[in-house]
Length: 423
Image (cartoon, rainbow, N blue to C red; front, side, top):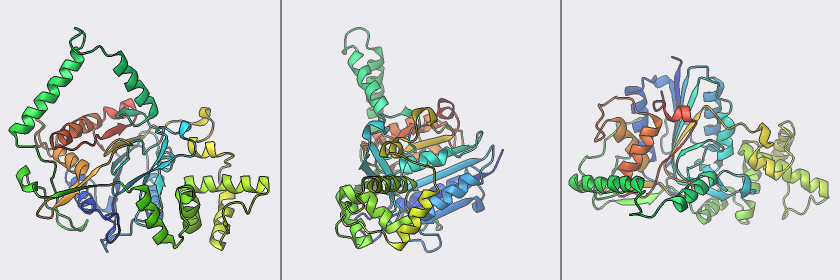
């Protein structure tokens, strides 16, 4: 067995319009779980959390640096793990027809320097064979965050949405004599409802104490009645809120939907997302080719941008916007085969950030994972191995019983779907 290493990121965005409550708790619980259950060494776990002075700030550059180190140092047999709790963002893709979901799914670092789905796809493509990279993203719009990875459970990708629509159209109506699968499904739903009522699980507000990622962790109460009077927000940034936060961050007041990528590159330069840098390279090349360098709404390169543009020239050649968003030619596009993504929800859904009346907060998916791994209510002994597929199926069932509407997803190869969670 190789080494076990992890990067854990929790962002609560304190003092902003997008403030959350439970993300640092998610990281603290997962850190303890990795050590106690999966045998990780404390030294092999890197934590980035805002509002925690003992960890590096979870900026876009810092998160990418830690992930690049995680993968660069990997060897065959290693188990790599990345947990993210924070905001998710969905942007219209420049070439939606060639994107798995039709959108850019992103995570939102504390400095708003977005990390996008294709960035994760390119990262996972570097993972050596016989080494597994598992990612849990307890954030909104997280379905499809590792672009081009096979969707095992969910309906975020266009291919799965089309397939499921066809299956619904072909499915016989109830009572036709051949709907045994539907009857079984309804029976499971009814049984789940009865079990939920019998256990008193009819409230969708549960919590976990908010605290430092390095502090002691309080587990949420088993009694759902303790959660009454709490509140639930979601881990999605409305595009208008993100744009306002980006204006405040950069001091630029002309930011709009069509200039987000330009603004990110203008402000962060070479530290911007690789996907953003590739897009800017194409845009600049096209402007020069057409002799329209001044056409981009008073865009004036800064010295930092000029340096970044020089660096871009040394990168892999990119000829079109389509290639930026869809990758190189189809023949050269190999789906990442060593990555596993467990998403908090589908690409068009939001993930819950719950707070109880007594101030305990956590993410709904993160809490579900901890509950399942602890063996609570699933018929398995504490510490028993749970496959990736089992974990997502049970998380869906548990969240449904608790009243949440979000549906976690699983993205990985068929082989990895059958393997134990993390290692």
